[in-house]
Image (cartoon, rainbow, N blue to C red):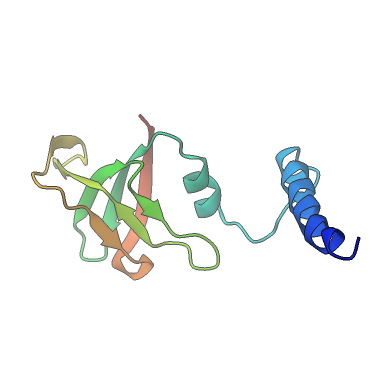
Length: 116
């Protein structure tokens, strides 16, 4: 009793809280819209980002990409970069395996074009 209960109670509490959040019985105040969106992306999505210098970067946010979460949201790694035309439309995939890592101070905004 003294050994099992201290281990069992936290496990049951976490399970209950996750179930309650799933059914919208409780709401956790810490996640941001950034957290909610990027944690829900299953297969990936297309992203266009306007950098501070006025340039546009586009790419595919896939399974190997990453987005930071609360309390430091805004950092993002995009695994696949694409060249964009003047209308921010995807033209061709850039050669090479490199992606891009951006901090919130590197860009003005992120536009998500939907999942693929």
